[in-house]
Image (cartoon, rainbow, N blue to C red; front, side):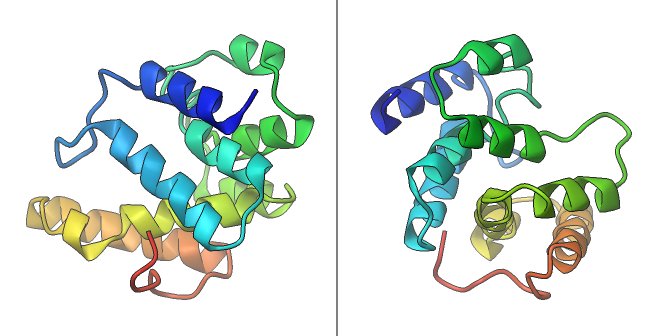
Length: 152
């Protein structure tokens, strides 16, 4: 599949979803894919960025992913980024670190999730909880304590 086809599938799969601030979820997917691109990610990583939440959010099934005309590396990255119910953050981070290419996609995801302009739209309790959660994951992944400025 081309990146344009993957984008179309991801946008359609998440079409009814909103993010925590009530914005269309596809905006997050676009920002993560763009973040991967500007960080030097390749097409397989950009494809995974478009699909990084699809299985986790039940927007697309694991069966769809298995059968999709994607590279095995893209599929591995998507699976690595798919959180499992009850999974400790440490196990999730270890899987990401063990999967070539996944860390960069998660870095872009965290950077967009932790964008101060997005977090400012949330209530204080939610904002504080998410800031702690994202900082903890950045630490587990060896990404430092804060999101990058100016990169989606």
